[in-house]
Length: 424
Image (cartoon, rainbow, N blue to C red; front, top):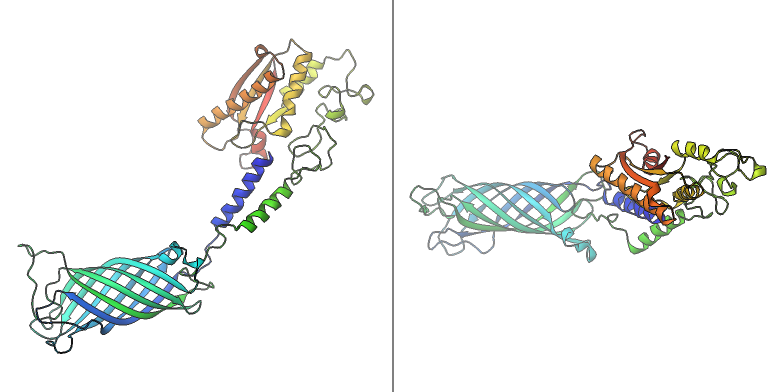
């Protein structure tokens, strides 16, 4: 029983930590500016600088948890020509919806730094080019695009982070070169074509964290998710203290309503000494625990009293039961003595036969509980046989769920998980 309770309490403690309510901020606003670089298509002879200063973007991000989120961002800028090359100027803007992964938290960067972090982002959207010079000046060329990028973060405070981002864009259905000096011939006769242009941006910026909590998901460390070795040792020590059984009756102190039970006393699930026949003499001092009798006869009735009648009544009224833990067919230690009393009575009364009746609570599928109740009955059947009772005098059967108890009550469900006896 101690092992069962220890496991249950320990799993429960860890589960509470794992399901703790989020206490981090999820919203942020991102402002960035920096460089761009159109790669292709470019008209032969036209070139752009390796780092062309002329890009800015603004985004709003929401994190579902500390590892994954989404953001909507708007970017705009202008492509320019490199020195000593033909002039061009092309404005552009884009709007993208992206998924965000907090790579730093996924890779546990917090183990070596709580200042630096890394985000990855990927998504799609729409964009438009508008050349300001050359043959296709003022043409509004609309495309769709895919974006992928990485963002390095430096934490400045709980509200602000410095960011450096590199993003790559692959656009589809672009019909003019980035310089506006030539068009792009479609790859197919029907005029439909796929991804046919590439450009990238490199930016520096700031992220502003919103919300009433102390930290944002980007930097949140779920410290309560796993207990440290010291914390786990402390929790186990506390649970072991709870499970001490000072009086040795099989019921741990924190459940024991009678913490000073005499040695050898028969107790119920609350650790209270039992007086099965109600004669005022506890079972461990009563030589006839199922037959009421005076203390002068050590709890036994006069010789002309039929012991079978008293025992049959106490058993058939289910005062003598063997109890089980949840989803278990092994008798709980404190209640196994009930089987010994039945075995002793059967040995003293060789003409008596007993049916062993197994039950389960209402948690779980009905078919499963029927099989479990039969397993419980069989385990007590085997226990009685092991004490020397002839198998021909015993029968067992599973009766499934005991619906007579309140299934919302923990104590009531424990009473339902039992084996009862019936004198035949």
